[in-house]
Image 1 (cartoon, rainbow, N blue to C red):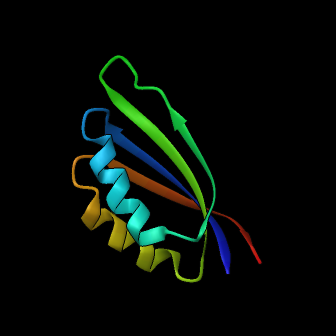
Image 2: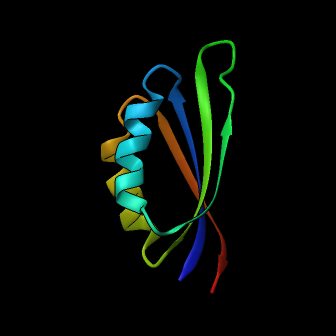
Length: 79
């Protein structure tokens, strides 16, 4: 098990629909979540910490769900 931080950058207007699809996929594994306000270009940032066995598989799955944004991840610790 690994604790992974996902850094997601999305357009502010479409954030709700993308985050609802994201929540359906990672429901129950979320440890912490931070919503940052949009910048001058209208890009909002969401940071999510989750507990995951296979972060690479999750990342490829989430890239399919997030088409208009960017997603980065890093492993914070291993349990």
